[in-house]
Length: 325
Image (cartoon, rainbow, N blue to C red; front, side, top):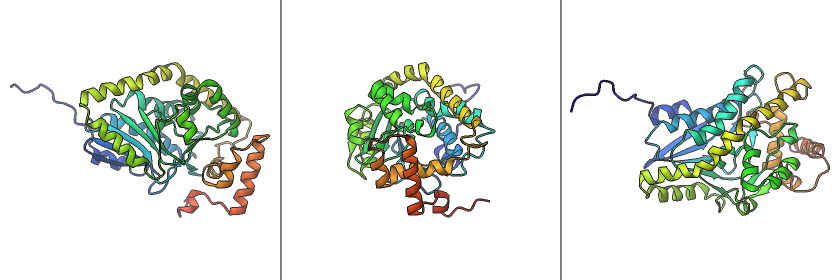
């Protein structure tokens, strides 16, 4: 057989690109099943501009590796994201367009438009920014998982994908109410409302994701890959119609708040936001509060500040022993 005039392009292999992303994700593959575990270094993921961008970069890179036949997307430990890097958005002011218009959009759309194979999202516990895991073909969560969208709590329009997915999956009226009140909803409610596929015993969510992945692996490659295309198809229409609009409206609200000097010139509010998220998702007092009726967002903020003072809350930067140079 004659040689081709030009050969196939050699793309990066797992051992190479797992090094690229090692600060933000652990990547492990067995029998064509790739597990993506979100983190910040060896700790729980602390939301920052760097991992915000890395999520969209990773989804694109792993989509190019044909050895990744099924993908599990999860988070280190017993929680989903619950913290922020207090210095993780210092480039936000000068890179606002890249972070909000490009990264925000790619983080969502790459999960649907780039990845062709079956995806399974596994939520081990409470946390925010669960949009990537909700975009998976199948989403399972721990019985201790808790969800919300608290953008309005911080004076921002919820336009980064979470509110859009809530409206689509649980219905317009429920989603509008939850976003307006920043109320949390439980794993059981998430299942009853069609937000997740299955609720799993705490500590067993990754194990169950692998069980489902192996069931899918037993189906012929072509069949399961085409099936995944049908699973993603409803989101294709949703994202094509609504994603840019949602993203741009959040950008507008952010710029307006900064112009009003609510966040400072460079949006230096991440330490306070981090404490509030920690309070809402990791403290018993905070999780009870957001389920109870309140008269204003300020009431929650005041109680959060009192809690932080009482327990001597420290940022994950300090908790993990980092030194800001």
